[in-house]
Image 1 (cartoon, rainbow, N blue to C red):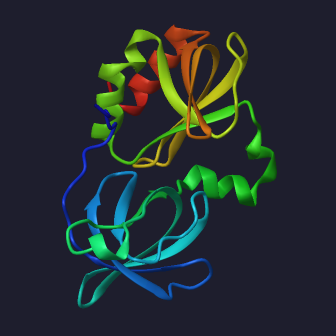
Image 2 (cartoon, rainbow, N blue to C red):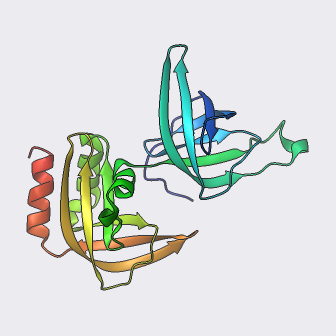
Length: 198
């Protein structure tokens, strides 16, 4: 069974999306802290970026950019019983910043972003306080190599960076899951505790 890191909520919002301008339409079937699934017969290519406009109610709209992370293609004769569409992963502030500041695209730089203090506290209890973290990377990483892990507390505008050793790597659909251990766990935990106000 697939284990998701973020809870999904069943929500139906009208969506417009497109490569340069939001010209195609669909509806969300579920949303999470990191993405959403868009029900539409016109499915974009895997790995492409899309500008998205979500109508929350008649006078509120959300605008953001995302990456097509998965596709569900359904034959026309089955569309009355199955929903086709695509999963969209929201692009993070750190990813967008790397486009504006090129040196941030360092292949040895990995980022964990937390939108709320509760999300960071949950990650702290589940893995960070044990001296490491698990992060997805779009680049292959080598076991025993040293990388820089950035903890981005988006809710407070603070970032911390720590050196980590890669202890395990798994591959999944063109991305790499990287298990890390802090080189200086005491300093890392002290810094993260400070973000949590502990």
